[in-house]
Every structure is written in structure tokens, then in C-alpha cells.
Image (cartoon, rainbow, N blue to C red; front, side):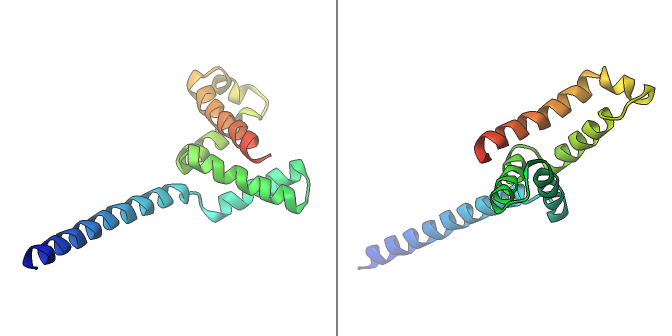
Length: 123
């Protein structure tokens, strides 16, 4: 009887530890997924809907798209790429150096790949 109680206690402790590890791992994954502020997500969805239509279906697809992008890029990378993309769309000599920069192009390409993957998944 004592052996079975010790075994049961050891099992309960092991399950508790395992549950704690799983819970903290899930929390870390959820934090990583939710590192995009709501305003940034809303801004993306509004722009996406302006480009694709103003229906409930498009709202769901655009929401899916930014959620998927958030699984690929960190928020910091997303902001950097969006800023560079907007800057590259400006004409003139001021951005000519950025257009030829391999680093800038790689960052923008990373965002475009994430968006393309999100389009395949969500649209």
C-alpha cells in the first residue's frame, strides 16, 4: 500500500511538472503569436479590405492573412519591412540608395513572401 501511494504521489508530481511545462510552452507560443498590437492588425485588415472588397468574407480572409503573417514574422520585422516598402514606393533621388540595397530588398522580400503564403492559406 505504501509503495502504491509513493508511486501515485510520484506520478502526480510528474504530471504536475509536465503540465506546467506544457502550459508555459503554450503561453510562450501564444505570446509570440500575439506580439502584433491590435492597431497594427486592424490597420492591415482595413488596407486589405480596401484592396479586396468590403464583405464579411473578405474581413475573415484579411484577418486570417495578418494572423498568418504574425506566425512568420515578428512584429519588429513586420514594422521594418512595412516602413521600407512604403519608403521604396516614394519616387525620387532620396530613396535611390535604398532601392539598390540588398539588405533593404531582402527585408521587403521577406514580407512579400509572408504575404504570398498568407494569401495561399487564407484566400
